[in-house]
Image (cartoon, rainbow, N blue to C red; front, side, top):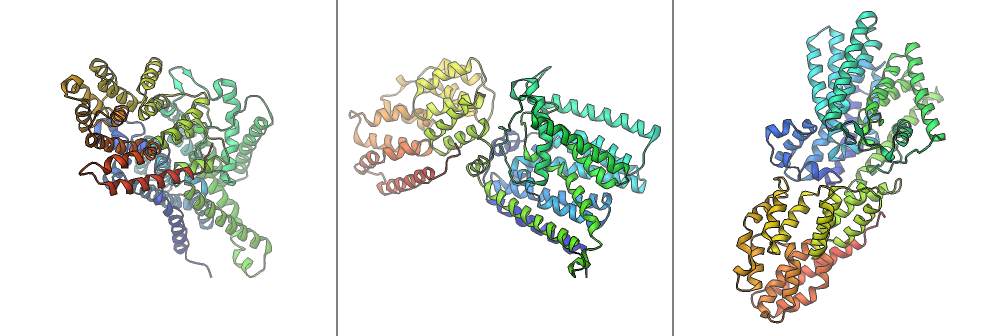
Length: 622
């Protein structure tokens, strides 16, 4: 007796929810913060700016998340799961129409729902782009299929609108006209002059969308007519490109080595066996697709063609900033899932008798499917756990790939933000050694020296880096404040004026206009001057001044204790190891000063030591 179809579907959706539910505990990783809670377009949205945003549909979805959940990463991930469930729902409707049987559609949906590679989009907040573009891509294709089945031209308008939404989420949607053309060719028997007209229209529309994608920022490696290539030259780039097809094919069937930070994908620098095998593999895949079509296996050939066509944009034909990324497979995997359903479908008729022992071969296939489902679900669940935070995911990724510039820089930024600047500097130095440099690295090296209280080194680096490259906004803002603290109002205003108005720069711009109020000669003594700056909101930039005043015996003990409190609060925010080193001195100062809570600082000392011990115990991916 067969189970009702809706129960089986419900079980697939239930297991999917169970797989991704633990991701709600995960923190922001890699680009998550920059795209969401640290993105001015998201936190302070304005309609004109959103309309001109890169991938505007994704940005609008983050705006809605921020309105609903604030800065809670669990809310953003909950919406990713919801969109993924919507994707599974429309995918089921598409599989039912394009697969050879309901059983094939069910197998295809189960394969897709449980596939571990989808964790790279669903459990990664920044993967929203892949989920949204795939969701509207599939809905657009579904509208086309229904329009052809029911002869309802109005549904073509729905297909066009959803196709536009898909493109506004990510540029991969440029392939939708080609996929639609393949559907018309294989399922609707479109041929002759009519097919020629459809072909010209589809190719032209794909070309226009591709050009819009490239000129709109879809390829950060294109600068006018002068492209940059992975590996530094055209030959290495295009020798590597064919290997990406076999890599994604392997990830589709054997997703054992999932890597979120794939920037260190191995390049091919000469014609070798890997290059030849990749070309052979791609040729064989295309040949099988054509043969299946000629033999009349329409669903299988369509799904193979779907995989190939939707993968084209990420095969580095046009240089992309990420050479490889597993989340690119979220849409092409639909084709592989459909193909798997077609492969298993012939065994449906013997499934019932197999259970009774009449067919060992079919029983073996059934058991194999169950085993694959269990392995996929287990791998997906484990991967969700590995993506708990940036540290755990980089540790996991370092098993398969050396940590890239992006990973090293991100770890450095994480430690700088957490209050461990010396650990951050180790990662920044390793990132520097990779040979890749950008404004964020330059800016954070400057910020490191500011946090450590070395203003001279920070200003020297600013002079060196700023002369040849743009710097991060936060670094420029901090440098403006350094000039203010030094009493150089002219330079403070010049630096503040050189950066655009943004959340990271507004305070520095405001303080630069008030610089004259904080000139040293306007205050009776150094402590009063430093207090005024601190009360105005300046913090870590005063570290060396506070350190000097704490050690100045000419300042009364109660004033030194108050200054020590300001210094210690700043160190606990920006340099916890340094705070731990001076806790005994600080406790001694506050213990003799009236009105200061010594017990509070003893508790803070315990917490700071525990924090440092916990960080010291973390494994090191480098």
